[in-house]
Amino acid sequence: MSEIKAVRELLDTAARPFEDALAMPPSVYTDEDFVERELSDVFAKEWVCVGRASSLKSPGDYLAYDLAGQPIVVLRDREGVLRALSNVCLHRMSTLLEGSGNVRSIVCPYHAWTYNLDGTLRGAPFMQATTGFCKGDYALPQIRCEEWLGWVYVTLDATRPSVAEALAPLEAMISQYGMETYVESFRETHVWDTNWKVLAENFMESYHLPVCHAGTIGPLHKLEEMDCPPGLEAFNYHWIIKDATLPIGNAHPDNTRLTGDWRRTTALMAIYPSHLVTLTPGYFWYLSLHPKGPGQVHITFGGGLSPDFLEDPRGAENLKLLKTMLDKVNVEDRGCTEKVYRGLSAAVARPGHLSYLERPIYDFMQYLAERTGGFVRPSFEPSAQAAE
Ligand code: FES
Ligand SMILES: [Fe+2]
Picture 1: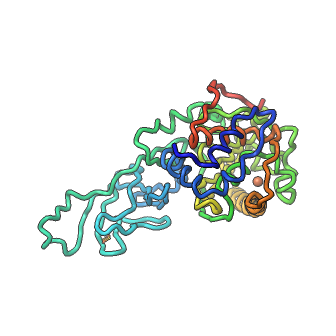
Picture 2: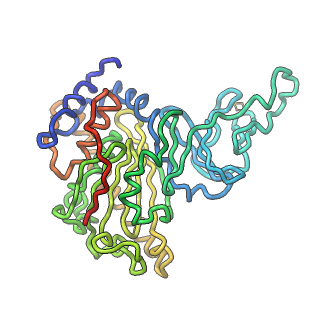
Picture 3: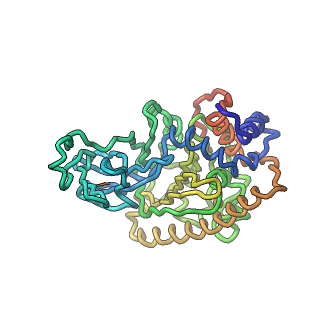
């Protein structure tokens, strides 16, 4: 591995004990070289979430995604199989689909070479005189794509263990919520002016809720009721308790799966590298992040309700309440995370100590140090820890 100053600084910080832990050094957020390292050693190798399978329900439903510089398209094919394909034409290499939508076939916008939804080439106009051309030789390369509890993940790495295997300990911890039944009602993409890790870390701690979110969700939570256990190999997490003044944040009266404190407990999960999920008894929302240079982050933002709140006579009202609330919360988070990026880009920026409420950030730092610099993390004992 070539020597990068940011990697060296990250390794030094990651080696500190948690009781004396500091925030990550500014170079890790601002160095161009470090972003390159993240793309090659993290984003080109890990499973990255592109959204919910329920939003790719019908044959031809697709979404385009740029993964570590590689344009891909994730779609539902004619047989109902979820697939990911290279989104680069096999003629003169234009990209094919953009955004999201539904198509019967994939038609290149340049010269109309047309692909079936399984990636095989269906037709190429005016190629009959090219005797060396054989349609059957052409098919868009397949990209690995897996579904786990309703989420769709893709990876460019042929050898990565399956998502279900990597996240089995998480599945055991949250099975009581039935996350796979939650329905996505919106999915948007945004670009903010901050480093992807600043936003990821913002999600990993609820320490900022009473301050940054004083005008929205802050008053619903007590810092004293937050539980931030050490993370595991593929993810970190923490639990918070939501006040009953937000009914969709607590279990629906018809919900018999959740008992005791689980009825008001929210799970906040950071699945490495960049899939961040808030799961409450009544709703969920998520971010999936991808770096766009050091100073910008590409965000997939989506969410929806648990089936009981969705099917309730007030379902439409619940959805509206959720989206309005999340939009306001995002404005607050955007303000805080863009300020952090401006601050850590300053010459005077120095990392300070982390609170015990920021434990997941410490675990994330060690994960990143492992992936980018060969840091040896402590071994993990998979054990489900509950909030009760
Ligand atoms: S580049 Fe796609 S058809 Fe020519
Ligand atoms: Fe926040």
